[in-house]
Image (cartoon, rainbow, N blue to C red; front, side, top):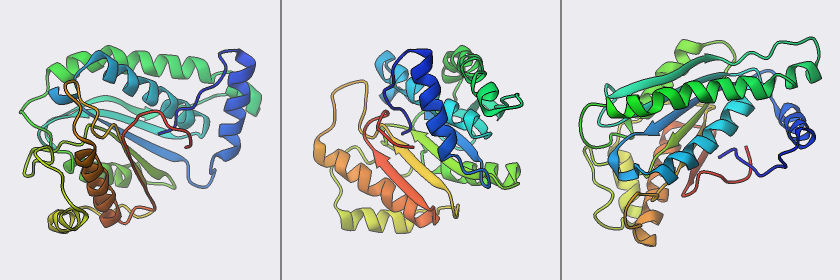
Length: 243
């Protein structure tokens, strides 16, 4: 994910924001698509707050890099989704410093909007189960609609236990089984994209065995590679270093 620990002082945050700005690709601003698994298996206050912290850092980076943001929550199908936010995150100002001084307010306003609608959106989701792979197709459709020079950065915040069509939580799966499952799964092509699947194995109840989680990581790595994405990251936590 994108979160990293920084000092709480304004000077510390400005220094971090300047580092983020220096890493931005002006020729390919980020189209950050955050998709949150709203099913009950990962429904806990702790997990929700971990996700919100990760989302906040993605919002920050997207704003600094003059990007566009979409945040949705999903459950049993591509139709069972709810929009939390969709739009640009403009930072107005004549200089970099002037623009960076507006980051905090843009991030705060955006996160307030997301938090305010998150609970009702999750409560209103239809269908039981979690159709995670459908979200890749939605991300591909969205980046085509956004157009321009934007580069898709897809963030899938989920425990990984897809149980629509395939149940990955019953037992550990080998790398060979993972490859076979991925080959049987229809995936869209999203060349050039960055795909991060985070929170694998993080559930509200008893944690799954490590070999089951390893199978999840391998499965989502294999799915991502099938899309032709330029970068694939599948991890168990929501707050790891790096962009």
